[in-house]
Length: 145
Length: 310
Image (cartoon, rainbow over all chains, first blue to last red; front, top):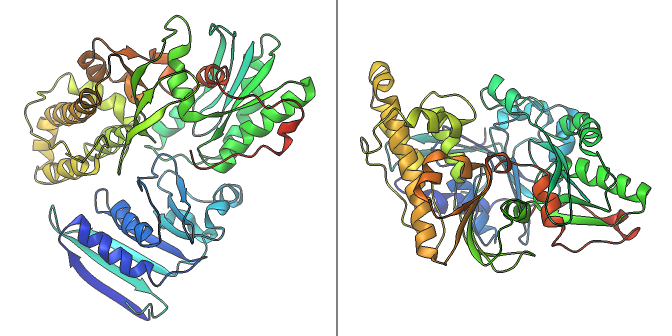
């Protein structure tokens, strides 16, 4: 682990701002795992990063739809693998288009098993209290954050 | 006769309707049983399951010869959509029929155009399901204008995640609806997000429930579960009804899975409500929308593609 950033945010806006910093270090083809309990702020974090990458309009939860793809200078994909118990080759074929030329944020990346492309960064959000979240960003690269 | 085909999410569906909106057949193979078994997690959520079910579902639905084939081409999981689109292309090609690509969301609205309801625009429509929550201005049957949409979680998703926090089963909406009848809806004061314009937000409500549940011991949660369900449902229904009232309009309609919620239905006695069996995903609504969308003549549709976005 080359880089590990830990901080506490006190509002959704601060979580989005932190995500925007990470977004500045990302490029097409990157995969970012996003972990955290229900309500920890996973979609909020992805929204902040997507905004910084130029996505306009609502960035909503993909829990039911599994994948959202947003057009931007570098397209952004937002996936939630919660409803997929474990990827196999056929399910990977369904998801592969979301990783093609995008910066892809993946919630519940552990459900992706060995099929998911290696993540460039991993974000973990933890509840502190109703407004505060602890956010850690880990990467094998020096992302310059 | 129009054949409708729907594979955009969890349901594999085919239906036959007449040009004036009479349902002739309506077959839905749902993965709801699988969902229940795995607590909301489906082992084969995607295209393979649709592939297994597509032909048997079509065989059951095709009780007469169609003159056109309508299929959901967007939005949804690409692999899932492609199973329906490919089946539709093959059937249309073999029979030299026109193909009508349909937007799934237009399909939900068009569930109101089937008989006996046969609703005539204009109306303001709330579309609320697991994947979508939108307020639509419907001026004619060929489309709609989006007035507002959820900024985070969909209303159906809020029900489902709330059910998970309360330790209830799947589908969460139905479980909360049933338990709420035994609870006091004013026991807890859950927040209704005030976001600008006609958009919706449900993630703060979900977090409020999470923190309320966290402070209860296991036995307290057991004792208060019905009150929590009732109060939580009240907050979701209030948020939806408030937005409908703000949007105004002489006539209100509600479609999508959340339209099956009993408190929402009771809160909107004047509204046109999608029939219960047409609230969740089905192909009759896709065939219905197909009557008001642009057909692609044979054989120009072979290059038609599925799209992830609306």
